[in-house]
Length: 493
Ligand code: GLC
Image (cartoon, rainbow, N blue to C red):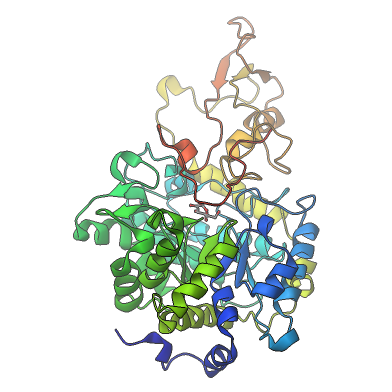
């Protein structure tokens, strides 16, 4: 494979920056710590290429102004030119996977499995366009979406993050969602991230981060196929997956990351690891880092242990375990993404258009969300003509999930594991609140004890589950932790 650092399609500006950067700056660009473990001074001193918010990791009062202020501080530190430092603006990344749902008051859209039931690619693009604006309203430039998992076993706790078990349906959404998020990479666009590469939805027994043991033909036709439209649309980043393919972890899989994704499919952006995903490659951290970077991971998402990671990287380069050409290729890719996104030309987050025209929770976005909810509904049967229900009927509404916006929204909403109750979901409507609006004789009885044949004509029983995310939702599964501390592991409220 041609050494891509000599890639003649790389803009001169990128190659010039690369030539002027110290090794420390190059290695810093390859790290993405979590916000709770770094200050702006750390960004200035260690040159991080990106910072992320893990699910539920929110600044201040979790309002757009708090987010913009936080991003202004990180951006300013990244642009320092003191002591010969080359100013390179950092990218801030979040999981805006069904709206910018970390943030209080954001428009929350149905999770992907519901959107799959809508079977409407145009809708997906409009959801992505609205989500991009609500991300930009917080001074953030990058979302780890779309998830292109093809969930093959519904026991997988992340099935709800998959559009479908059908790769064709996932593919029909992939390019449109990337187009909605990235647009023309101008004022209204954010950096998208196709994830998780590859085979996350195909693990044995649906175990989260498990073993995807399938022939290459099935991997290509089922799990790689949906990435093709996303790559054709120019998705700028791809996230490596926790699962293994035929016994080798994707984070350390040179064939999948470099030979297939970059060489064969021509992916010119950069690959980011998942949350401490490098840790699982080896008990020895330095060995794990070397395996991941040499396999083709370009940026390391390191929740807490970024100091150790930097030290190991320096030693691994100095002793030749990681060739400098691999470092230069990774940094070139990161700089190329920032260049293509126009990040060098954008003012500081607080000065950008959507930071000053906050559209978080805008009525037109909520209208798209309501349309998505309507289109995501699936009627299984309608015996005896029960539906439609007369709005004037004496309706009993029951169930612990009847008046619980948090449960309706699911995981990755305000908190990593989601929220319970109505207090944290601003601007949404619970099922009971919606019915009450149109049916004056409706009555709520959470435990159903008010049910009385003489008093009610029809009952609506709402069945649901407490929100969860990742391994917390897999049948019997647990989310393994890397070296770093993890996010709060519980549902709030
Ligand atoms: C998680 C998820 C990934 C998410 C990342 C950052 O572990 O696997 O989908 O984007 O961490 O929160």
